[in-house]
Image 1 (cartoon, rainbow, N blue to C red):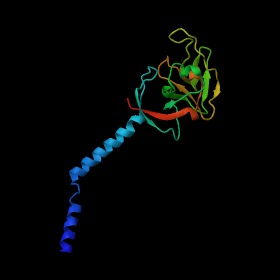
Image 2 (cartoon, rainbow, N blue to C red):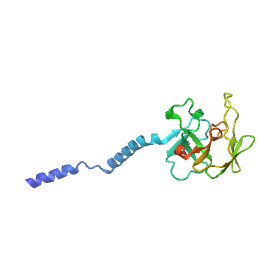
Image 3 (cartoon, rainbow, N blue to C red):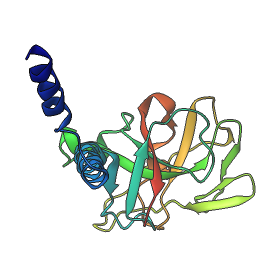
Image 4 (tube, rainbow, N blue to C red):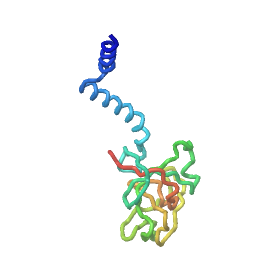
Length: 177
C-alpha cells in the first residue's frame, strides 16, 4: 500500500506542469510586467521646440560620446537654466555639437563653429526681450567637456551657458521619434 500512495503523490506533484501554451502565456505576462516596471524610467519625452526629435530611449552614458549624440544632463554652471524649474525637472536634452579636442570658435557675428561646421548663431535677446549671455571661447574643447546645441535656432544651449562637463551627463538619449 505504501508504494501505491507514493505513486499517487508523484502524479499529483506532476499534474501542476504547464502545457506549452500556458508556458508561453506566463513568459509573455512576466515580460510585460518587467517591461512595464523598467521601460517608463528609460523613456523621455521632450516637449521643447529646441530639438527635432521628441521621444528618446535613455541609456547609460558609458563609452564614447560622439558629435551628434543626444545627451541628457543637468548643468550646474548657470542659475538661468534652473530658474522656474523644479529640481526634479531640471534635466536638459541637447545634441553634442563639438567634443573634446575639437576646435570651437565664435566669430564677430556670434556664429559658433566646430571646425568648419556652423553650429548656430547666439541671439542677443530671448523671446521676451531679455538680453542673453554669450559664451565666449575660441580654442580646443577641453577634455571631458562638450559643447551642446539644440536643432532650433532659438534653443537655449552651450552658446549661452558654455561647456557641459562629463560629470553633468546623466544619460545618452537615443532618438526614437
